[in-house]
Amino acid sequence: MGADLRFPSVIAPEPRIGAQLRHGFSHLAGTAAGVAAVSVLICSLLAACSAVPSPSGTRPAVSTTTTGPSLPVATESAGPTTAASVGPHSSPAWASFAWAEADPEPFSGPGNQFIMGGTAWSGGFVLVGENYDVPSGTSDGAVWSSTDGLRWQLIPNTGGTFSGSEITAVAARGSTLVAVGISRSEDQAQGTQPPGLLWTSSDGIHWLRETGTDSIVSQVSPDGVVAGPGGFIAYGVDLTGKSQQILCSSDGIAWHRFADTDGVFSGGTVRSITTAGNGFAAVGYSASLRVVPTGVFDPTPPPAAAWWSADGQSWHASDVGSGGYDLGTVEPWLGGTLRALGRGACGGCIGPPVVWDSSDGGQTWQQDPRNLGVTYYWSLVMGDRAVEMDRPLAATWSADGRSWHLLPMTGVTLPSDAYPQIARGQTVLVTDSVNPPGGLANDQADSRVYVGTLR
Image (tube, rainbow, N blue to C red):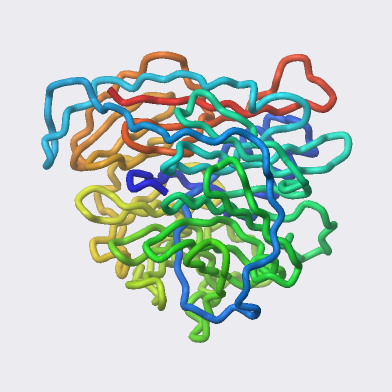
């Protein structure tokens, strides 16, 4: 991930539930509920683990794509054009948010195209997802690459590199890209999770696929992958769906499982992780702390939980107090703090997220007593400022998180369900799912990409 990449502050479904909703949408062939489910995709995922030796210690067998042009090096935006200054670094103020729609052709055509994650890296932008064929029920992973966010190419599935898969997340460190997903080739027994898959690339065009059912990644059903100071981290659950799993790799090739011998994550589910200085902060919930009498329906979300690591080698439970529910996202925030968003006590109603703050790298968390009147759809930290988007779509920005300035949006009108995937420099990429005209038998869902430039 680029240094400027930050993650959306929205409360999303628990990752595995979100995946089930996407799969259900594929079979429902484009219902409105499916479109809404597909649009909720979280890519904010960072973690770390201790170095437990790999069983084999050798590079896994791989297959590779070998066609397609090389991807030119992307150039950064020239930056804001106004002369006013604001904030501790006296950076120019933003005056507008200009939006344009990317070429839709690479995200259209037979089958249902779903974008599930993305990242910026030194060679440009990469998006990942799946191409689901309705009549046959087969699913192939999909990778799209671009240098500017407006012109994209769908990477060929040469040699079946992406066949029988769903690619859910991608992360970048230096020139290396790592993507994770799940196998869609096997019929899963009730109560089991699909085995994990992994791909690596050095240019966004040519990809290596890990193979072998005895690999560590295949023993985990991953929800995401992220890049940190020491390499790459993947996280998810074991194939029983009952145990939190965290894997790490220094190069994206050899992977090791974090050995949770002290039960730090016992009964807990990690929903989002981010960097915190040289360490990491994770948030989620703890099902083990929730006591519901047999036969009683309780819509209250499970209690909030969080974890922290100073070096990525050991993890500790964070202090979240005795109140609060289901922390869904965490991100670096303004002033060197961290911010997380949780849910209120009403699990059966829709309300604004509850804001949590940490000033010590995620070791302790407190609910913000001001509640900040949070109603926005998503937010991003870009440099020393933050941008927020509301519904109906409108934008504001702030240098301190307290004083917010209106940011007029120009260009194309964004769809109401547009969702942020990537932010770098002065550029934001958002995605959406649409129903193409005509209602073709094998083409009920396409994806769209919109590029916003802060000026």
